[in-house]
Image 1 (tube, rainbow, N blue to C red):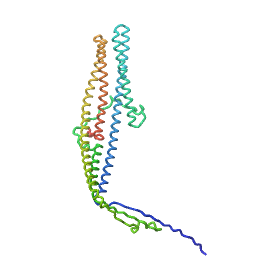
Image 2 (spheres, rainbow, N blue to C red; image 1 turned 90 degrees about the horizontal axis):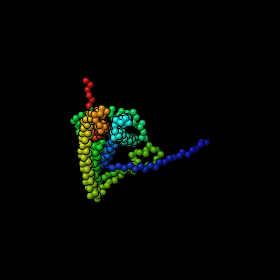
Image 3 (cartoon, helix red, strand yellow; image 1 turned 30 degrees about the vertical axis):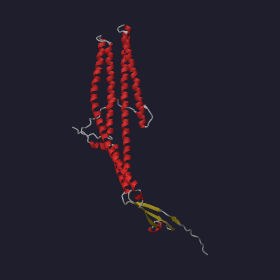
Image 4 (cartoon, helix red, strand yellow; image 1 turned 30 degrees about the horizontal axis):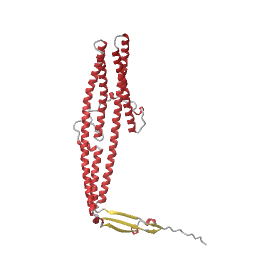
Length: 356
């Protein structure tokens, strides 16, 4: 007597539906081209944001160094004027100078004291801006040990005859180019929509215990669905769609041309700033050295009784202004290189110099 068991039977009912459009007139291909161009344009826009961010960080850092150096000059000037004031007090008590000269010396000290908070405030605000750009909490540790503005070496001179092809590296130029490509592809899409669309649809159903036979060719029933009359009844709308696509393409071309002209202007402005600031800094160095010498001579002549204290005050004021103007010029010069870096879409590669 044998044992009998019931073998379970499994049934599968799967009805997949697969459909796609036959690309008779290139609509799908042109849509793919448009989507790809839009993706590349978006990518270049993201690169532009990164270049702008790097330039903003560098510019803010140079602002910080500029205000830091100006604050250092102000503190040094204050210490010098305080020393002079103490000597003036001794001379006043001895009766060798009058009260007006003592008051003038006290006013010079107050002028230097008033300058310190102004530059300290600007330095702290630059630090806060830099912290925000870097996504960190404001702290002096963010800067760390660094050279002062006066210790920085100016970059090498920009070589003459930069090719205009460098402008093609700019992310905004590349973005505008891909926008033109996308708009051109959209014309093809709109043109293809004026013709009938044909879609193939496969409806499959099978009932079997063998899943491997599910995708056999006999499991599908094919049908052809064509949108043959739609373009006829929408002839006017489709025609307008093509006209709109062409106008958008024309607009994108004009935008590309405007972007190119703007890029040329920014590069020319940046190169002009770089060259003129280099000449200005050399002149400012001479001015500072001359002002330092004039300040020393004025004090010597005053102590020798050959001039009055007004000449000393004038020499000190000229020196202080020359030093702070020099700090401003150096900071602006370094920032002009950052502007050129941004205008060229990420800087240029300087030619290697051969060793002698």
